[in-house]
Amino acid sequence: MPKTEPKREKAIVYTHPTCGYCDLLKEDLVAKGIEYDEINVSLKPEYWDEVERLSGGDKITPVMVTADGEVEIGYNGIGCNYG
Image (cartoon, rainbow, N blue to C red; front, side):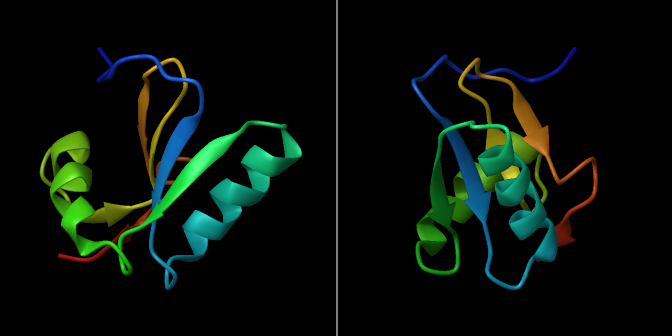
């Protein structure tokens, strides 16, 4: 069963500037007209704890919480690991 969070108005995407998968995910979201808030963990390292909680302990990007509350790890299942 996928992990879920509370529903929200927009998706949240946790990113890192050295992760090309983050760029691909953001491009897909824009192309699909999906609104999101981005949290760049290199600028806001205090959010790494949240990324690790959502991912089950991995320091990985991208991590997205959809507006429906579904947690998606990586871009099509592939991400950049920072741990």
